[in-house]
Length: 136
Length: 304
Image (cartoon, one colour):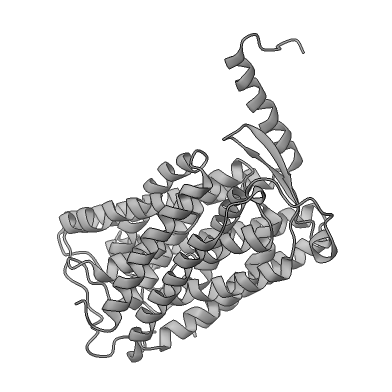
């Protein structure tokens, strides 16, 4: 108790910090990983989309209204075609939650939490099914 | 893989207006920011505002299937942006979220498949109906002590096996609250419906999950909002994968929507911790009633 706060405002701040830490300690580090993946995915997607929009605006050929399919992305992407960049950006965003679920799966696996490994696996199977239904 | 013909029967066209930089910024970016702000404060993905806006706005008039697909991508951005903050702050109940996601993703796949093959007129009317129901429900729900503190009884059965009960830190009154989760299967069923509505109509489905978790499962309101937000991303991703590969995502409008809702969400997550639950509900309900009327009017051809 060496840094016990002196006045009321300090005490309030100190109490918030201590309580936050107490709640935080109850949870595994999975939270931090998930928060990073979600934030990173959105930021990456926004970056790619802005690049696509900027190139489309500079080239002046109008803004594309349809996405490219994933297997058609590679060639146009290498040439920085706006439609390919915009499609990739949207795809990154759609896949961000999928990566988050995969990360939770690994997390529960590490915790040896059989029930939640199974639950997360079912969610992953559902997402894979959605992807397959989409391309069929 | 082209969009099936059933998507755009006359008189509903599949083409949107030609958009320039000015139109994209003024008519998409700005409103998307507001949708993201409202969405993250209310615990919904923002899609419930985006879909009607994208279809009804005279300067845009996006065809409904494209509006749904584009909104779903925006919904993922709102959800991920807000969820990253709530997860970091430990408001989200990860176990509860994962458990209910089994139901929401299944529902989302079914919903998206129905939406891809059904006449858009049906979608407009379904949208209006669902939104009206959500508004009525939010007005009806009474505020109780359970909004914050959990139920006192012991955790039983499935809830105990799934270890759903948890605790959270509420910055509003700087205290830690423990809560017990009840009736997991009732919440599971409600989540399946929410997922179906999400995939069918391009909304997050938070307006079904938040009350379901709060009232049926006795999850505190703020945890319910954070956990719903967390689930919405995966739910929307399941149906968005189907819409994307059917070529229904408009990447230019979507990118502006994503940037807008992302910025709006950044603002919104800072507000949630300070807004009392009752005010959230009233704002929610009033907006939804207007949205419902407009969508039904458009569906039956009263609105252009």
